[in-house]
Amino acid sequence: MTDTTTGEQGAATSDAAAQGGTAKTGPVGVGVIGAGVISDQYLSNLTVFPDVRVHFIADIDLPRAASQAEKWGVAGSGTVDELLAIDDIEIVVNLTIPAAHVEVALQALAAGKHVWGEKPYALDRQSAAQLRDAAVAAGRTVSVAPDTFLGAGLQTALRTIRDGRIGTPLNGLTLFQSPGPESWHPSPEFLFAVGAGPLFDIGPYYITTLVQALGPVSKVTATASKSRATRTIGSGPKAGTEFPVEVPTNHSALIEFENGGSAQSVFSFESDRGRTGFVEIAGETGTVVFPDPNNFDGDTELYALGSDGPETIPAVGSTYSRGTGVVDLARSLRAGEGNRVPGALAFHVLDVMVSIAESAERGEPVLVESTVTPSPTLPEGWDPAEQTLV
Image (cartoon, rainbow, N blue to C red):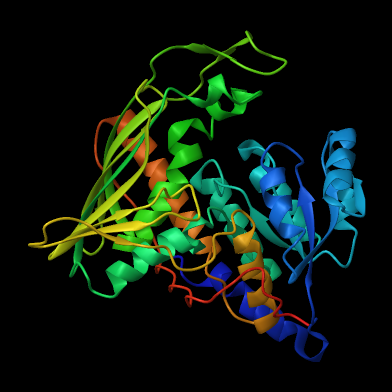
């Protein structure tokens, strides 16, 4: 196996050490690139978390960037070059479309910034390796969503497993089945383009959760389908517009893990019966049903061997949503240590997704060459809204 647990994961440590006596203190400056739909979710949190300060929003649509800056009380807006020239910005939050993730992240690294990016890490292994290697060379960190597993819901489920309440975890089942996002998203075309589809758009939530629960993946076997060649936008100003579907809209995968466990996963935009957010991990002495891995909250259900019914375990921890991982990265930079959503994790998850796509195309199993160490659970009292950097 190729060990991706070193290098970029340790970039926060090496960067802080390199700064020596000139290491910065206080809140960490943030700039956001991409003022689209998801930026509201990030900005609603990043503008209130005291350990970060949002200084600037950039977008190729300058009026849209200005509108978001005004809406969220951010001082500046404009171009990417203007954002990257601001010394006080230490972390670039990259919310561009998947096809631009690597290009924008490389620009940020070249400007001396750390990066938090939306998923996926990249569209293929080659560009992912280029980005990983650039981060190591620059002594900077590239972390990539999802950070949902830092929320109270998934953290509680993971603690339940790691506390030994189901014995050794052995296998998993995940289901994401929906008719597709074109009915509600005003510009869904990119979700059916290369680098998206249910596997690359939704898969990171489920695969990241499986890796945290069962460890790194070793092999996948998959099938895929595409129900129709075009789809039609169902809402917003472009309602009624037909667009092409470039990728499979259903993947079914058997995922095998280094420790001998396995999981079955479905990622589908082809089901008229909505069945999403399902993650189940079974072990020697019980089964844990996770809350939705696309959310930060939700209770856990524990089915213990021999019990009459499930035990509901309330979520304990932070229920703040997107942007939580940015705070974890910011605090790790100040502490000079690796963060809990390292680039190595996102690289491995991408490797798994690419392997699933390759397996479906070839009709044969594909070995996953990368590996990673699951992140430690957070202390129950960890709170991104707490001021810790002064």
